[in-house]
Length: 361
Image (cartoon, rainbow, N blue to C red):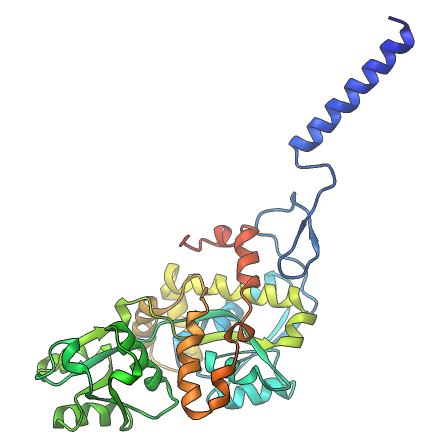
């Protein structure tokens, strides 16, 4: 073999070996597409590493500031979590209900707000649709409590079930409770009665057969001889109770900012379980309540909060059914247009969930 042939052969082997090493090390110039932004993400990036947000400041509204079900968004600020991921200025403002928070969002006074799935659903057909990107909680905490004579699900059929108001959360809870025993809203007579105190009074007085009553009242209800037919706290029936959302166009223009906000909130959500003491103290300061009361509320939240902040289409189905009773046009709304799960998916895919200790489902 000539010296030229030997040199060529050695050169070929060297090039081939270098190529194999590059492939083994994840090289070769390949990239993977981000499910959220479509941007290229190098596989060699550190696990759980977040992109630089487009905005260094964000404004977040909370529609029920006195409940831990919406506190993770504020806790992330109190613990400096947004800041360590590149959002240096955060303003969290409390509002009295979803309507006022949504109004501020649409007016451009907020970038995100935390509220119910019903708000996102109602916005789908408007000029300013909003999308839910994470859920603090998808579980209601009511029970279907009935008079002593109603002992089985068969006894419930055709009976009245007391709720607060049509179109409200208790109405949705009644639908889920009926679903839990294998019925639909057509199998009972859902009756508007008033707040929980009024519902309990109506039940004890025998003017209704059953009522939607929070499970925190279990002892007093049992002491009164009432029967529990179904307990939502022990079922996987989703209701979009409290979700982080933003205007669809804002999210599209600021995908990295949204990813970081979701990530920071998710990290703060873990603290409600792993460092409940600190979370409780911060919640006490924010809600302006006693430390002991805050600790009790945070402990209760562990029973109905969504630690991974994930959800499915089911979280929007019952709210849609309730809204449709008040606005027939809602019956035709595509619920998938009211949310975007890609941010939570991306965080899981890049290893962020593992990094911050989110339990695998």
